[in-house]
Amino acid sequence: MKILFSTIACAVAISSLTLRADPIDEKQFQKLMKETGDIAKRMKPGIDGKDSAQVSKDGARLEEINKQMVAFWQLKKVEKAVKFSEESAASAKLVASSAREQDWEKVKASLQGVMKNCKACHETYREKLDDGSYRIKL
Image (cartoon, rainbow, N blue to C red; front, side):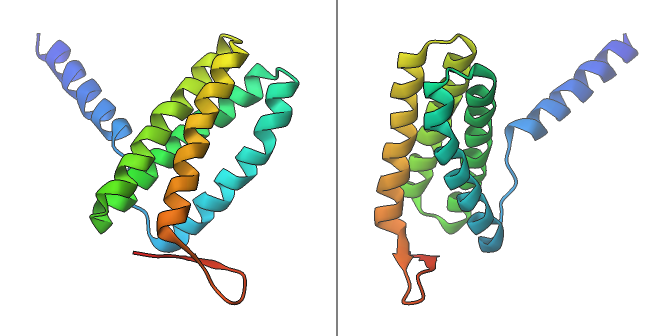
């Protein structure tokens, strides 16, 4: 009985760790934004080529990234950006699962949900600098 309880306690502890994303700093934030851009560039060719493995993998990665964005924005206490990131994570999860099911219309619709939130967040919280780089605008 003690072994079973210990096993269950460990499983609960591990699962709670994997569900929570640790906060990231602004340097990591910038790196993840660039990775998101790279993924976005791969999505159309992946969808057009019906590459379910790649699109599913990219959708899952977008979900992970957006969960990290949730933690980042929560630390900054920017609720609107938290909402954008939560919605993007949920849509990215649908991209991944729909790609595995090869439901390409649902993949496209879910990806539009991600992109809509990205655009809204960028318009609100991203500022272009004179040198062409960007910074977070609060």
